[in-house]
Length: 113
Length: 113
Figure 1 (spheres, each protein chain N blue to C red):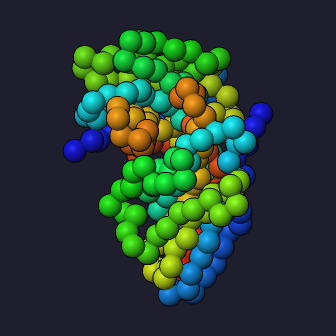
Figure 2 (spheres, rainbow over the protein chains, first blue to last red):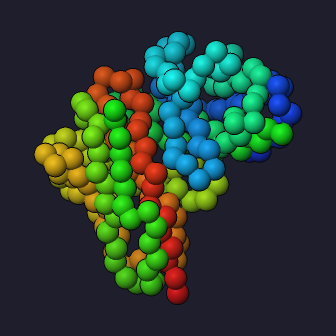
C-alpha cells in the first residue's frame, strides 16, 4: 500500500532556529497538506497546497511558516524562527484526484527547547 | 464556527465486547465525514468516509453511521480486539474549502484482556 514518508521522525531544535520538515507524497497525488498536533490536543489544519501554490491556510500558518516543493517530489514545511509553542507532531497528508482518501504520514515530532 | 465534538472522551472495554463512539458536528457546508484511527505517536489512518447521501458504511468490524439532518455520526466497533486500543477521531470536511479537514479531539479507547 502506498505510503507518505516523513523525515525526520523526531527533531530537537533550539528556540529561534529554522527547521525544515520533509514529506515524500504518494507519487500520483496532487493535493498536499500539513497538519499539526500539540501533545494531548486535536489535530489542526495548517495549510493545503495544490498546483505549486497554497490553496488554503489556517490562522496558525503565519509568516514564520512556508511550504514548497523544491524538486517537484518532496513537499517541505519550513518554520523560520521556532518558538517553544511550535513543539508538536507535524503530519503531512496527500490526496489524489477524485480520491476522498487522505493518506497521512507517520509524522515528525518537533521539540523546541 | 466549524466544530466537531466527540463523546465519550475515553472508554475502557473488555476484549470481545462491542462499543459505539459518538460524533456531533456543526461544520457547514458539509462535504464528507471520516473516521480515523490514530495509534499513539502515529499518523491517523482512515477507517470510513461518508458523503451527505450515505448513512452507513462498514469496514470490517467498524461500522459508521451518519445522520446529516441531525449532524450526528457514530462508529460502532464489533468484537473488540486488544489492537483496537487507540484514539478514534471524527473528521469533517467543508465543501469548497480546499479540502481542509476539521478534527474532533478523539475518543481514547482502551481494550483490556
